[in-house]
Length: 164
Image (cartoon, rainbow, N blue to C red; front, side):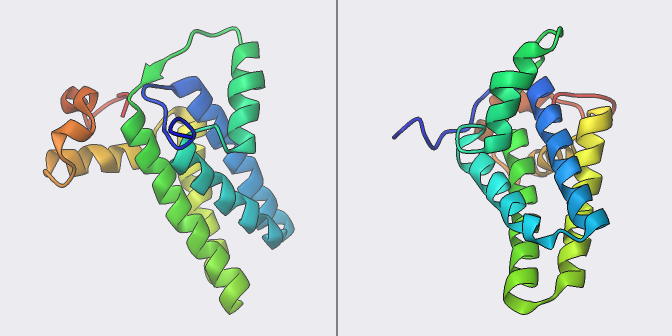
């Protein structure tokens, strides 16, 4: 059980971008086709990935076991803690959307939150810009996140393309 609730470090950026692509597809179905019931599996997926990386996430399993190995590209390993932080932001937004929609009937608010997820996941998937990772780096620079949380992140740049 010890390994069940661990997040991988490092993380294959190719897999992270494919997972983000899956999130984009799911959120677009929610937004464009009014399938608000999918907010629940969206939230589950984010919480599962925060807790265990791809282990408890159906999307993470498909990506890491089927899609990534089938691609003719080299793995590109990046630090795990910023990716976990980004997943935690997605979990916060998606769980908030689920509570807003299912508990309070505030579907408009829920869809706005899903829209935020769509934007962030699109940036990650399409251009490799991890918004949560950039926030993580800013918080490390500000001293909010201690350096020992991610030793590999200590030399990451906030400008240009970086692994965090």
